[in-house]
Length: 428
Ligand code: S3P
Image 1 (cartoon, rainbow, N blue to C red):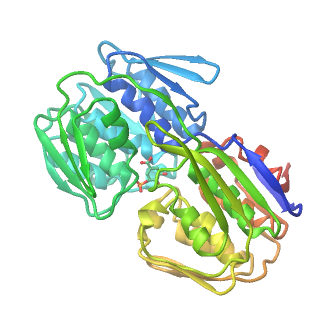
Image 2 (cartoon, protein in one colour; image 1 turned 30 degrees about the vertical axis):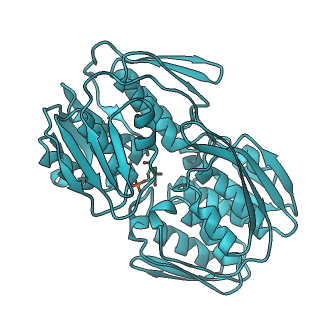
């Protein structure tokens, strides 16, 4: 069931409020509910493999979880439970890295493991700073690779300058800092997605952000519980944005989307390429939320070399827009793409070449020259975002895509929604 055939169906006008709920915020809702002593109420939690891994782990630490239609009530345990078996993070880097920060100061012994893709992703970016503040944490290759083992310890406060802009690293350290004695600071080269800071501040944590530097005080009492409606995920909606941008006479309207500025940069790049995009802000409680309207217009090539941390999940889909644009597009300073769910520079360039699009790979980016596509059989490389990006390419020419199961990690209803835009069927 995991080989998919996709072919063009012509122009479309498509409006939906069914884009998957935000993955980053859903992970944080599950973990942050453990920082309160009262039940958190979470509506529209993302029901996908990655976030369910986080939720199961939160449950095995002793939280009780009640599901009622679209609402999740997470009641934190009075005392945390030491799980009797290893904790499965699946394909999810966010689950593993954020929990490394949280568990490092929690009394007990924990093992975090994941699938073959997660097990080959770098963990020292979190292990090293945690070790410096007293964490008892290890893994294969001196802590670079999962499985990761943790024995909870007393942590000290810290001043950490992260060499990379990564919300996972930042969030792991914030979670550690909240339970380390004293005042800690973390800075990063450019601001990465800032959901952790915003949500914890709303829960009453003493945390202040000033551009790329965060100052936080350790928790002196439990935080307030969450009461939140998770907005829809702009990174998931982006596949539909690119679909509209590359299909003549087409338009999509994405409802109830998260509009946080660190999360909509992909749409801004698409706008620079010529697509017509409108953001309609509706409300702002935990964060800015609203609708996004995307309409086709002829696209031109673009240089992308700034704010890469804000584009890390959108670049695979943007590459399809590059391939449909007039002229050359260039991505630079994007080495981080090599350590995502797959090596996204290599996955994207290999698939584009199979489509007969001219693409060249560099150490820290790639170049694409827009042109006609040739029908081809493509691979997901086990990466949900690569899979969905190349399904969008199927709106141009018929394609076959292998190994599409990974889509379930972030957007289980993707194919159902996409079938309104293109012809899709599974080959058995
Ligand atoms: C995420 C941060 C990003 C992103 C991932 C989700 C998060 O990773 O790619 O999909 O929720 O913190 P990095 O922090 O590694 O850049």
